[in-house]
Image 1 (cartoon, helix red, strand yellow):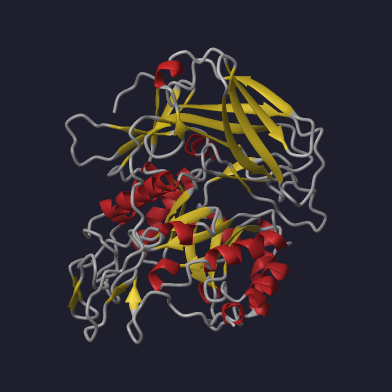
Image 2: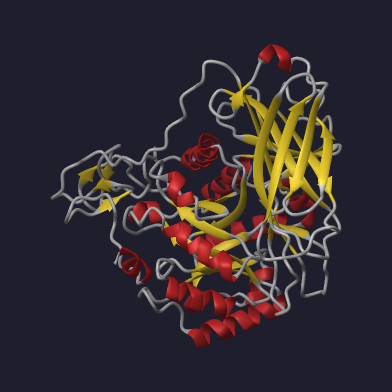
Length: 515
């Protein structure tokens, strides 16, 4: 019975008392009393001694037969929360360690020396050839084994490798780079088969307000996020209007982020939508749960939808937007390759709900920004928390995207952000490792649209994207500037800098230059 209800999208919020509405697990109506919401992810208990934690994963989320290069990412470090017991004295000499990666079903063994790398945190890229593998829809099982010649000691880690058959329906393919967190696509408009990094930069919008695709590209945006115009469990978009708009996107190369927020728990509807859209040239990725943690959706809802989508379309990633500070993050994030964060800190009262006339705290209330301080730094705090949660879970890092606030004068928000605040929110997102920016919502004010258009022409420029998606984000300190948040990305002898309050956005400096 439960499965039938879930498929039909009728499952109710899971942890609220009967008749009590919740947001992020908290009661918020004046007639309800507070109660502990639970669901907070906690840092694992520390071990008595250091543990060796080594993870392996493919560099790309998927490979196809035309790919020339492939590699695994091997990360090793000492940890007090994840890994296996390790003799620290022996660890000082790792000259006889041997690493072997075996791909299931194939006589493919990769040998790679770990000498000098295990005793401290390290990340290595191990190349391998795909020529002995057969493309298939079932992932290959991969095992990493580390042995020590001088002792009977073995360390194992596992992952999966997706080596997919080529597409025969003309649809697009999107890769996720597990090293730097960016997306890679092929420019089908000019017929290119090369994989190029894409920094998604855009707005949410409805079909009724959707801009002309070519004009939108000309203004500095590279994707469009379409919010469904129907809110029932079985109806999504006006299909005629949707197909007309997607045809225009296909023609000019405006990438599409497809939203199933109202129907992702209805697997019949998910199947119909994926089947309808998956062959579009302009499809970039899927979006299922919109604030499922806020709504208190079933904990396995995003994961069930994820499995169904991947069964029907293994060529595109799946995303989920999480709203809460810390409410069942592990459960909801499990159903996504990419996590979005929507923190709206402008014009809010974070201690008193102006909508419900109630207080807001750790166990009660809804103020429009969960456990926030009502400052722009709430954005960077949340992104940093989400990154930390991934390490607590012991899983590979998942790319994070920012959803800056581009609206106001409604509900909890007494005003719209200024242009400077809009840029600051975007720069804070990028500084704290966001690999995509999708603002809520279009159309916005002339002031905001003007500044986001100006910044977009910078961010989507290939020379800038090369830094943001091709190098590690490095946190920098501006001496004597306590209010500045600065990050850098270094490629060769050049560094890209992103200061928080620089309304010009980003600037590059030659190696040796100053702030």
